Image (cartoon, rainbow, N blue to C red; front, side, top):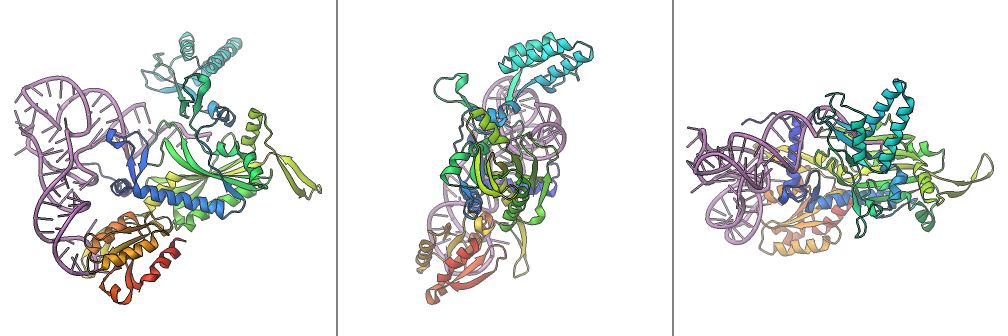
Length: 492
RNA sequence: GCGGAAGUAGCUCAAUUGGUAGAGCGAUAGCCUUCCAAGCUAUAGGUUGCGGGUUCGACCCUCGUCUUCCGCUCCA
């Protein structure tokens, strides 16, 4: 049976997915049970790469910026958090399907449309009553009565014209679970759909204990969970994913300046890593979320096209203000700096927030897909060969150095082991003495190891080794004592 | 969610109108000792995604289901 022709990009994406599986980067979750849709596990090399990307981000935020500190908030949060953030209202949509047309509707939209038609027919009072009834039923999550309302009002599908409805299902973006042993509504809590709220609710704790002055930032990495209707494209959109977020608290009125600052700073972070600038672009949001006064995506050219990799949002004082309202705890900051306009301190205010939020898994995919190459090489004798190589930046490569004795006798493994012992405390090393040297090089290429050193018989005489570079496949002899500093210089 | 395509060993693929699943690569162990996957020997690895149905007999036909990829839809 012939397969449909794949475009080079599709083909490349398939190859990347296969490679990720075959070399221990990414596995489908619980694969022996057929996997779980849109959930993936990171394998030995994948978890190293992911950790290195996270560390690179964390370092750039909390170490390179004196005014940014980190936290590690819990995944579980008080349920009111999500009422304050708007997630409960915005993402609890009662949905219903028409069995004949197979079209899906939001129940509230159907009823509102009915109310509109009643108004148009001059029955405004009836329309208002309908809306009131709907709000009451929605508020109490009484879906059976809500469905009865659809029947009573003779609401039909606009496509099929029938009222052959399925049961109403509550679709919520947030996963819920029970806290404690008794399953009561009051104990329902959510798995956080974003890490940002853990930062906002800790705003004053952090500001006071770390003695931070505006402008300052709070950084956090961690898992978040969203029950996406459609979750696809490998690890691009997963139901469980990891975010790297930094909320930067600024004086009101200065947010656009910081928005521009972080827009450039974040792009710089990517290019500093060695990612190609031409695969990045900004995409300004036209339709803004309820909390934002400016927003953009940093998009990356994945094998399936330009897609959002990171978001920069100017969130105003929406979040802190809402938490102040719901918690009845003041979330203000006293600014002692002198306002030149008045000659007095700026005083109390709720800071504005500029957020940078990047998906760690997406960055992983960006790095992996950018690194992957099926390279054709011409050998010295003129014949051609092919290798699969991951051009992962040395700084974040899963393994930095492979140490390979040319043969496994004549005392070479002993020398190699000494080098291994002196390096493995500094960075991730890999030792191997099996198979031909060329084969070992290719194995390292496949997992993106930037450096290989080979210990041969000459090493015993003059303490030099061959260091071989992944990308160019060139090699040179250096003193064995230089190896560690060469690698350290490349990953600093 | 709708539509399309596909699931056979870690990977890439075979298996004659339906007749008890093979190969290459890879892996592991050993030999050889050679600076870019190619030598030799041996070994492991699959209830053909899963579950029904038809049949004397199913990788193959059929139904369901799960998973993945593609297009649409969705993605504050």
